[in-house]
View 1 (cartoon, rainbow, N blue to C red):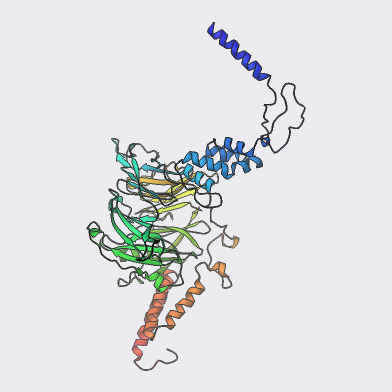
View 2 (cartoon, rainbow, N blue to C red):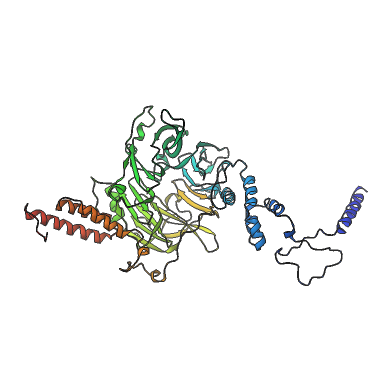
Length: 591
């Protein structure tokens, strides 16, 4: 009886609702007008378009949808595209995703950018050892405004967001009973520091050596005596990676502003390379073995030789390893520093230009186009130019160059079957490339040594880039590989558009040298300006012997092939010996 009475009441309510008029909403596109053929059916009432609702109400309703559905709804018609692209919708979504976010950032559409950054942020990893091989996601700090950079250490992970907050994920990784590395569920994160611009640690792939974390940050310093204001000064703070305790701090003059920091060298002679906003490189040397001692001392900040000898160059980015450094200029030129003879031989195949007394001498790499980004391993490197072409150089004993063989390359060699990579990573003896298909799906390719599970699915390794057995997140943008794990950072910035250009038809097959009549667009590295600077340096030398030495040094800087450099060096040595044997008399016009 109770069920029958409830059923009768429900039928009465549904009958009343069925007789209601004027609450029918069309399912067709709101910008297309009434449906053709259009006679109203009896009892249905007049259809109501979504366009009749107040825009604030529509935005409020749409803001409750997931981000993926909001993007899909904006692709249905022009009306919903305008509504779903409004900043009011994304402001509500951003407040819902990150209620503690105080700043929305900068840009043309700051709220949409902030919402998508916080929706797509994620740090994933896959352990190399163990029986199970699955992709796991880390604990996401609620205060983080997207993920910009990350760095794994022996036991912890450091993450830098887009507002300069550096997070410290303590005890993030533990070993399970199956022998694999997994995220600890009780992992907690703390804010290590704020106002950070960049951070770095030991550049070796093995995380055991990453004892200290160097953070480039901006701090407010009190003004001089007699003033009430404060000044913002850049500084380098050194933290222990095990506990997050600050052990050292270096403060610079307020007139110097830096944007990137990298490390190079051994622990006792650790060189910190700092890139200024003007594109100049400064360096200082510290002894890591004495950082934990409570004392104060002064270090000398000096201009690096690449900025001292080539003042016309404006460096845009740096990459470093334990014994080498690579500079990319704003015009796409590449210059190299190698500090050990073994690595120099692996990279260039010769020791002709290596000077153990002048290890900071920059060497120019010859490339046919502007370089956008690079990756530097122990004895090999990878470069990606503005047309999306991948070039590899260096030692190829394990096939880590991906050229299909195991022959070393002393010059940048193009890998023709890879185009437009998203990210590139060069490890100890293997290389990884993150690529994207035509359907926006992403895959991870790898080559080189496969020992220890470094190339999932290819335990014997490969001399060519092969698809690895790794599930790649949809918004993956960078990657990092250690001895134990493979890490992938997920983040999507709507203001970071693809910068690749289409290859001209005349340069699709092969990479011929630029013609003599080429304009400034065929001279990405500023060769004309560089040659003029070289001539000025030669003219400033007082004697003929000094000019010969300067010329040999300039040959090492110029983007020439290895055989061409050897020829010029031998010819200059011959001329120098001939000029020295003439005598101390006045030089003839022929000399």
